[in-house]
Amino acid sequence: MKSDAQLIKEARRDAEALGELYCRHAATIHSWLRAQASPETASELAAETFAQAALSLRRFKDPGDGSAAPWLFGIAKNLLRRSYERDRVERSARRRLGMPEAWHDPGPGRVEERDRAERMTPGLVTALAALPPGQRRALELRVIEELPYTEVASSLSCSEVAARIRVTRALGSLSQRLKGVSP
Image 1 (tube, rainbow, N blue to C red):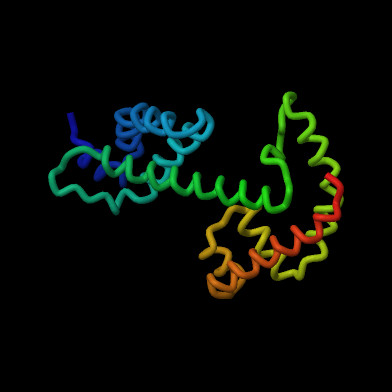
Image 2: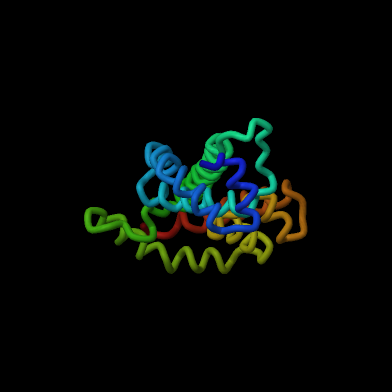
């Protein structure tokens, strides 16, 4: 049986080697992620872990020619951390804007929240349209597209500090404008 290190070396040229590596570790990675997150998130992050691994095979370093598990768990841990951060940012932005957390599909048990969200939508659209273009774009990139501030800054051709300021000002403006909106 080949070692993980051998499979990784071969996977650079042979997809079957990557498939074998996946078969060895996918269940363990998924189980660990499932203990940390929802079933949907765990499945998405497990798949993303192996996609990231496939893209970074050359970065695998194992002088002992042993297991890829620590490397794969490191990738999974980083993806999980980023997922938590995106969720935290989204929840915070929704709270600041007075939006319900389950904006996309509150489900049958949350009819009041769905109703509140529907009543807020016109006010939110108006408030977003009233933002200066730079602030609106920064907010879209950070909250809707869930980009980290470094990427927001790069996209807007500004510093990370300036990107953070634009997002903060946009959230403040929206919050002020939405105070008059009847939820």
